Length: 455
Image (cartoon, rainbow, N blue to C red):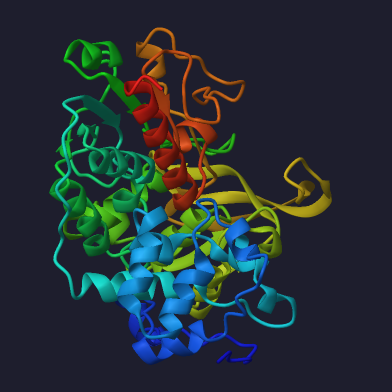
């Protein structure tokens, strides 16, 4: 029976006044009854527009039908045919811009909570089943994966399931990439990422941390060590600060560095983060929202500035709503242009008021300066205006071409210009969503299998 209610079942959450004092997950997840009611809203459309909107073409109506029947294990079996990380994707993927955007319910009401249902199913399964992996026949061939973020995890997991001996090389001292260092626990708990890492290990994947692939240990060295194919999924984590902002000042942080400190070193935070009184965050994406909400939880007065209006901001709508709910000030049409300091320490930021002009290549209206300036006092400035590609792999390896934007050039299957080397995720496209990086890793696994099998 279809539930024709136009509004989706609300997500249970921590109370606003409580969650601002802790780093626990804000969204608490559906109960079984919530999930069944929400699943019954699915119209099971004949053309399945939600599937077309999913980068990995998840079989959405099929798994939702199982949820509506109360067959949560069957729903999990359907989801995991295509998704390596449903508990993660259900939490952080921008469903409102992908699968839910195409939902028939969205025409006159609210889309079915596809992401919420995916998360429910994954969490339900994890609560009842230990980490395990089926035994597979080994092929006796070694594959190296560079980077342990979403693309690397997806590629390594699929290759291990095919019988390859897979080693992940991670430059940092912990696995998970941006999932671990870049997303706060109130959005994505470390325990969820840890389970994905343990699942990889159960499949026989070796993870070597603290080992960057660069001039000291190169792609050539990996081939010499017996790896027959290599996947490059090292992301795009080089900060791109706006011109005019002095990143050498004490108190000025790239969002990556700031979130890494808060997410991984919360017990030993630098004094100028821990004791900050007023934090200004620049940007309108999910990273900016994550950073400003972290600062709020650390007790600072918080301001987020964005050079367009929030209507054009790429951050998820739920996360923006949470930002407002947490009494964080958001100043639209505001662009920081320079920093004030005393003795090398940040004291404030000069900002320019903006207006929206004609649309740019992204389709959003371009911000245009007005020549009207004002000052904002602050002791921390977090810059979340985007990142670019790391050259550590391609600049220390012969035969790997870049595209015109600086990313690794690949064909649709993930092949690079060098035989045996494949790439995917942010290292190719620049910063994208978790599910798109995961899809690229899975596609590369198929291509690597074909390459090593001589097909």
